[in-house]
Length: 317
Image (cartoon, rainbow, N blue to C red; front, top):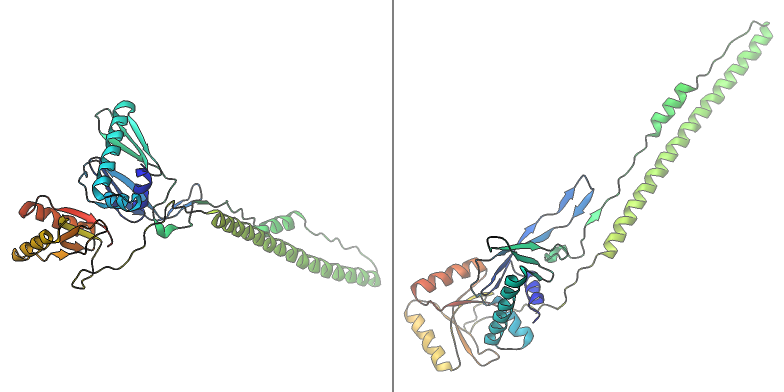
């Protein structure tokens, strides 16, 4: 069974994916990172961890498999149990297992599970198209300092000689003309260096921009199977149903479903009666919640005070 693929699909959408009887994969969002030493940029991503103590079936994985494999919920649970049994045998025999696109789980000397995540896949959908980028080091050359050093190494010396007044005026004219030429030459030389600085800067900026464009064009983000569309559902009273549901019972006959609904009302609950599902079963809910934490808290309270068989269904109806 492609349970590895089903788990990775759910990690794109949920913070917690539980494998009943084995453990749960949890995700946490990490902000974009910059490593100055290597000039590397890393986009935001979901960090995946594993908790071997969260083993209760919350219904998320089983319902997902039931929909895609077109089997009943009970058959999906049985398929998960078989996969978990296979994983435990491999851990006992080989000491580790690999879960595609997610990570590797192994046994340490104390027989505890140790999880090492893979980093090839980013489960954060808002980082679509982003990938790690390494920026080349920009070398800046200061041509002004070179010009100053060149001027210091090349002084201009002039030694006048005693001549007649006409010769003195001739050399004075030559001196003035030479000084003017040197001034013009210095101006154009400085302009030449300034133009060279500008050309080098533009060349470096163009190279960096081309590298950025190339990396963006090469970036890929692959999801093997399309996720089901999210639709807005309401119960028979027109109340919007949220994605996390605490289930009181599921019946083949509507008579027993209605009886449970009335009993819960008489006990002070506010139950929800759903329409028959595609298998013809009639679900009765204690309530629907907008997030996993509230639903889990409500389920545990109901298990302690009223119904130890209550369970959570995570599904956008």
